Length: 400
Ligand code: NIG
Ligand code: FE
Image (cartoon, rainbow, N blue to C red; front, side, top):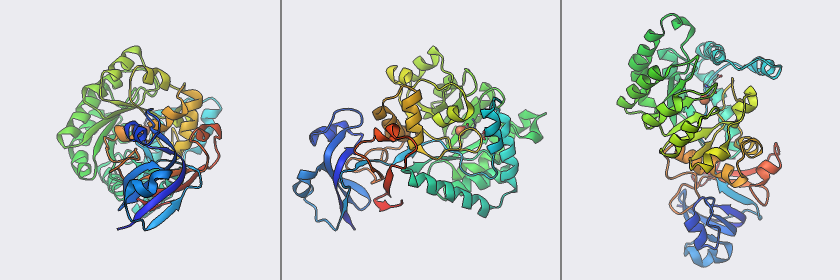
């Protein structure tokens, strides 16, 4: 058992206002404490307070000391939406979009072709490379979706490979209808809710559907989500990415933990989200990379909706692994304050994954931590593109 004192923390973001206030910090959702310290015991946060109180406050024997040199310490980012098990590259599509071509969901099929061809080891190597990028940018929890297999064997491989690296695995057999089922989409829906679900469910926690014109209709999506629930999976939904639709209402009806994209929001969507437990997950990398309009985080937060921010890291619509990039764009383009963007990337992501022991630095939580080599997290947006993430810990162990 190792007890580590983290000290000389210039600014500590706890995301726990009541605990912060007890240590003279702010009562804001980010619960910030200046000149702070914390103690990690066996991978969990054991004490949080002022650096001046560290020696008496904990009453612990300390085995090791980590000096933050006045830097900022935040909860590790919770990236609650990614598609990082795939092969191939679609840089050409990106370049064409920048020259004016629209994003089309059909591009998914080219990644499917490359992924089906790749061996487990090739997929694993690429997955690990992307995870390493994520860790280096402060992410300590990541959700990973399947969806680039779209046949039973490949989907099963993708959820199995994802499960090797995270507890947050999502079965997304309903990403698009694969080319070989274009003329008999009902057969594909039957496959997804039949054999594919049966093979994938044991490796997954979540079921997801791309509910959108060009992907799955609301009724197909409802059947798929309900079948997943019957197999013990929890629902989450991709909706309103390419235009307004009924996907957000469906997500709320099925009790989805999160509805993701929300690029095109109607007033009714915002009201329904505000009255629900469903988190709205915004993915600024997608609008950046597809030239679609940014949704207003401000509008959602002002209406009382819980907002998460995620990368949606995937080769088609958003090939960034960087939560700091997403924060910078959310602050610049989505009307979110730096504090809101930070909360949404940490506690908001945890809420979108229904996790209670990550996303906060408070007593009893996992010691998943990221150092920002700056006096404040505001610098993540103020100094975009600058590598400001220093050391990163997961369960109290240094991972980057
Ligand atoms: O979340 N919207 C559907 N799926 C991905 C895009 C996948 C792709 O273009 O390869 C997304 O944006
Ligand atoms: Fe996605």
